[in-house]
Image (cartoon, rainbow over all chains, first blue to last red; front, side, top):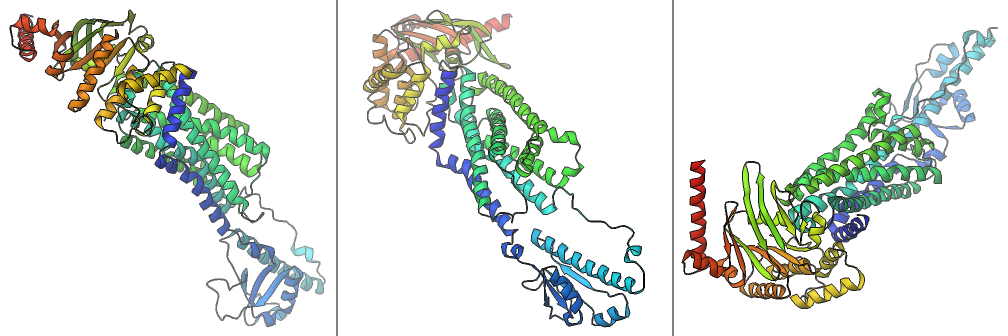
Length: 389
Length: 250
């Protein structure tokens, strides 16, 4: 049976590789998707800004020499803001704008509350971090002035600060990085769906439509051998497409300066090996599902319609994880695709193996491969396979 | 040698074959003759191991197809009702693929390809992809694929359909050569001239049953008609009347 499966595999592979449309359909996503994603990542980075001090544009700067000195001591560059009104966008080269009132100096002298306004842009990771840095420094200046005033009146400053706290961000990831990491996972998860799509349809529905199935089934070859051979061919496309997508993405990401990404990747030989170990059975499982769909239909066109609909599944699941992941019950993450994404997320972004989700995804894949291959082979033995569209 | 006994096959309420029995001997050309829908293709598919029958049995060289279809298929060369070629593969690649499925490898495989290339004069299309082949060229590839492994039994479902005169003559010569070499050749057709010219034994089918069988000369003599076409019409009409009577009696 294995010998015959190999004969079928070799023939199928040769047949499919000769079809340029099949190759384009299988590998265009794997090659272009990650490059596009890498480009998006580059757009979210700002190398120059990250390497420079935070720059604050300040209205009525001449009235606040103490504040300016305080900020510059903390490596924040202060420049004058020349606008008369609050900014709609930050001026070129500024990370924030501090609008001080015209009576800043008088109010500071008389101890009145100064109503200032700080304008920041948090649409990028760098902008968010620098806005946070400037805002903190301005607040600290306020505390510094208050401390001097209290000391001058003989009151220990600590009396108005019974609790001193430091702030630490313990959120797993910001929304930007959550979206980015989710998009990356979606891209990897979708690769086997796209890699095997066209060939899975052609190898069964297409063969049936071309009437070559009847000739094949009249040969002394078992249905299982035929299905194993065809599954091996579709899996080859799925696995190569997936690994190519992963490699292309890593190459694209290597072009982005280190430390400038909105997400951190923790990849080494160990994690990459585990990623491959997990993706291979997943790709074979998806190939099996596609073959199972393909054998139910009579024509290439019909098969293409159903398998294209099946492509929406990983997309929906990925968006569910990105936008609704925090609301899902823990058990939901052991479902197919979600467990895959959880495990890959842990490997890629934390550098740790999440063996529970990894085992879940591999077990589901192996069981799925066995069940669906058996059902597909049984269907191939059915005489309905002799009729084409 | 192919023996079919009381074969029956229904698709839901449609009885494609009700009761078909006949035998096709070695070194003879046996033809299933019948109108469209008479059950010829279903019978040939049952012989080829492509479908499971509801009743009856088929044996190929003594092997019961239902019990061991792969062994039976090793002794068969099947030329299906449609050529079913792979358009992106060359003629040689078709032959290699099907020969390997029959277990041929190495020198035996190359010798088999050389022989069939000579027999069917395939050299000019041997290394061309089959996409764009004419009907005649497609027929040659399909036939080469069927006889490559030198099966003792060759089954052809309406092999002359769509062929021009020259290709029909070529096919006829090849079938006669196979018969002369001792092969059992079983084909289906509804082209009277072809059946009369080729067949040693004719099995006339109508509505899923065998109406009559014998050599063309015997069938003509039995009905006292001038040719096989007229004999066919008489025998089918008689069968239908008998069926009607049996139905009314039941």
